[in-house]
Amino acid sequence: MKHARHGALLPPELARNHLGVIRPQDASEVYRHPRPELARLAERGMLHRAANGYYVVVPRADVGGSWLPELEPLAAGVAASIYGGDGAILMGVSAARVLGAVPRALATAIVAVPRQHRPITLTDRPAQIVFVRRNPDVLDAELVETSLGSTLATTPEQTVLDLAHRPSLGNAEVDVPAMISVLYRRCDVGRLTALAREQRLSSSLQRAKKWRPTHEPS
Image (cartoon, rainbow, N blue to C red; front, side):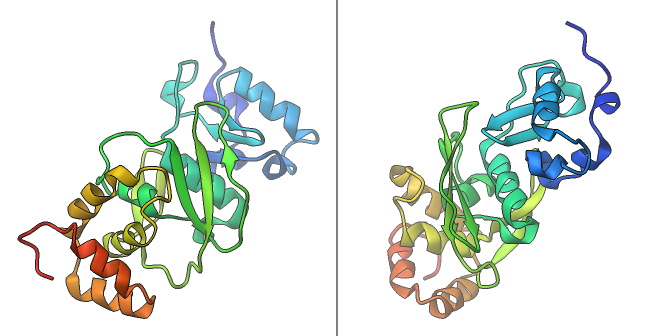
């Protein structure tokens, strides 16, 4: 089936959304009836429907194919569409994933946000996005590159503490020791200790040290 040119059908205002995630309310200034218009764009391959009320701009080269966005940047984009780009930070197992500490795909994405939100179940795969209420001004975060663009994720130091503090968050507890071992090599030990003290996570730091590589300083 032939598809029309990407730019001919997708308004540029929509393509500029953070990580390409679009909700019907985001398109209200472009379309009088955004829901059916977004559904039409999805049918034509311009958008990918990831969950009820959430679409992702399909890369131009993948229009008409079976493109599936990676879970972690998708979760960041969904959270940013709700709270803004500075109010959504990948954390825990999702930060570990984008930092290269998790080789396998996960079925749960964890995003730190300023206000609580119910989990969002995806409709394009058996996975969900879980939102954790955290103060974004307190978290140690950095910009990371993903397949959908740049977004915020916790630093290796913050991620190590968060993983040790709540190892079951994200349903990948069996992989947490290996994640911490990988990330600990990239940590500034002084920064790690300071963060643990500032965030009252000293017990989590002690737990993380049990999983650090044996040659790493304490």
